[in-house]
Amino acid sequence: QVQLVESGGGLVQAGGSLRLSCAASGRSVSWYAMKWFRQAPGKEREFVARISWSGSTYYADSVKGRFTISRDNAKNTVYLQMNSLKPEDTAIYYCNVNLGSDYWGQGTQVTVSS
Image (cartoon, rainbow, N blue to C red; front, side, top):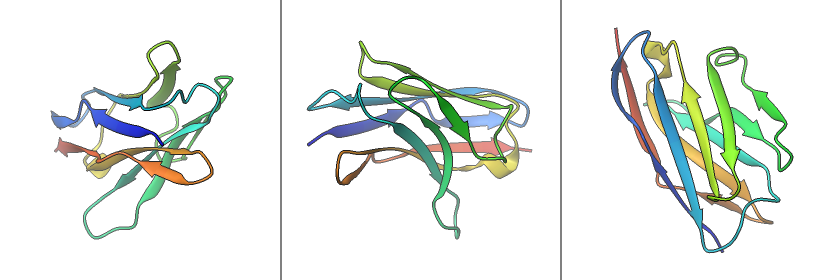
């Protein structure tokens, strides 16, 4: 089992930046792909970004060029650097890892004001 804890969310003006963190505990996630998802009010949870165990990255079109996913395996932590934020980025952000089963954190709220 693994526990995931997201942090770093908050309220920011459009055009601003935030850096989210997802700290894993219970076991190492170094050899697993890690993902970020988000869920806006009244909408389904959607994929945001993925990083493989080797560091390869993949992004949703809506965030490409603005968000950067990275990982620090020594800290068992994944990050999401979010720049040029838009009001439509407002959502609860969740990190995810699949170890045969999906594990999710509790989420961190990101609110972007116009």
